[in-house]
Image (cartoon, rainbow, N blue to C red; front, side, top):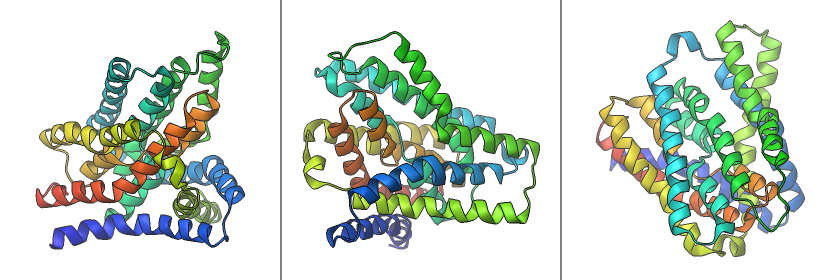
Length: 315
């Protein structure tokens, strides 16, 4: 029972903040404009600052584990190509494929992931290392699948792939990751004034994102296209960790590293999936449904995974 309580204490506070956002929306304190502005502000400002702070504050030379980073990168890569290949075989409606693949493999590690890791360990060096290994690939692979599976009724241009690659390089999250990594490798010691300012902005990221997720929840859209939504949720929350967590355990990963790997594999789909799907002519309704469904179900699946790891003494 103590292990179950331990797991609940990690997962439930995060989702209760989302419930607060939903409740504030219901009483009219928050609206669509707030959700739109909050999501844009998070994507362009608070999340990049949070990632920069977390990565730049880590002594990369001291804690860097190439085997761990490669595991994160390779498992993310295998998940992406396997899901895309199986989707081409079993999902006949091509207009759904890009949205399905992206939301099935891409985790909300920057918001949900770091919140879970910090709830368990406080400041963690493994979370930033996992982000270095996985998040750039999340963005690159998402652009690839959304480009090739985009709505074919729209005019295709060969320059779109090049444009998409440029957009990856301009992505504020990727820029923040590499700037943070550069600052960590150079051992830059920022003045206290800068540290406190960065920390203040970074602290906004997680609660504001969770409030925005809750306030933006729409039941009707969440119920749309239920069959592919449930399949994608099962892949995201159950099948990926079921395959790769035992491999990670066999390789000797425990503690912070195991939690970071679990979050990478089993965290809910990131809300930025919806933004990219809409902008690249893919199914926004299915993407929104998967994001909402995985976010809701992860309260239970992640609790179960964390409980299991705790019982097996892997964390």
